[in-house]
Amino acid sequence: MEFKHIPIMLNEVLEGLNIKPDGIYVDGTLGGAGHSSEIIKRLSDKGRLIGIDQDMDAIKASSERLQSYENAIIIHSNYVNMRNVLLERDIKKVDGILLDLGVSSYQFDNTERGFSYREDAPLDMRMDRDQSYTAQDIVNDYSESELRRIISDYGEEKFAGRIASNIVRSREVKRIETTFELNDIIKDSIPAAARRHGGNPSKKTYQALRIELNKELMVLEDSLEEMIEMLNPGGRLCIITFHSLEDRIVKSAFRTAENPCICPPEFPVCTCGRVSKGRVVNRKPITASEDELTENPRSSSAKLRIFEKK
Image 1 (cartoon, rainbow, N blue to C red):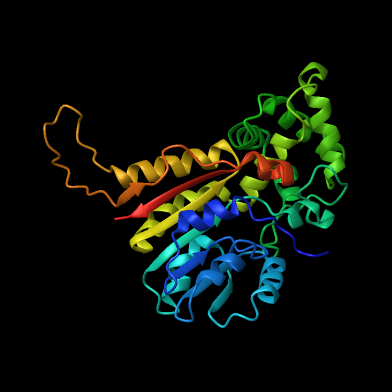
Image 2: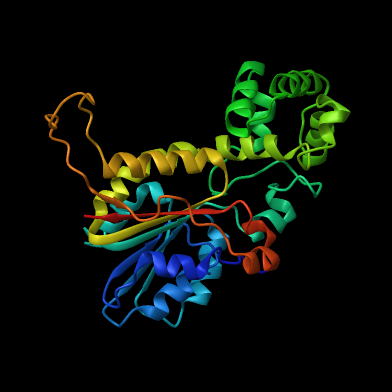
């Protein structure tokens, strides 16, 4: 199966990065190099593109796509390791960083990866298949209270308690191994009236399991401040999110980086000494155009936020 991932808001990302031909740019979620293949076209021979991805299928696909560019460096890792990855190559500062936090079309559509509730497959959901723990292990090993917490917190599912309870009851009879087995449990946990609205009843629980398994929110929170520090003056960090949990983390981190002062509002002047690291380029998130929404419905929940280093 070909690794396909339509680059979300491509023109908006290219404009947001404000690309300098001789600059160094990092795509921390390389995927099939949809964004990166256009970024590198705008670089001179002196410019460099560093692509990072934890999915070996993405590494193989992007390596083929970028093989004609000598100034492309492709690395199998997680973007949380970006600083060390760059320092190992004697790169201390960069001019732009992109994160596209969405699951790729390839990952969703490749049945064996177990990301989709639409196909019957082993419960997997690993972004990095070098790790051994899968979504199946979470479903079968977590306590009822742990399952309730992640489904509620990461899936924002109001029936989290019923779903967790029914998962535990079902796995006492038989280990839950496939997506359709889990779908049946979720469906039975949500009242029929509630299932008539809001799309597939499994959507929120699958999101929660994927986030927990791949530590997506933790990795994002642990990376943002460091990525801003890695930018040269005028350098930009562009982040595309696909759900409110990610977007709130990015929005908060950007706001804090722009105005880090912790002095009480009644203080006439700042005494904490915290200095702004730059500015939020777009106060409101950029969303996909009507044309893009028509061509790629998966862009409907995407939000792009941009921060520029001082």
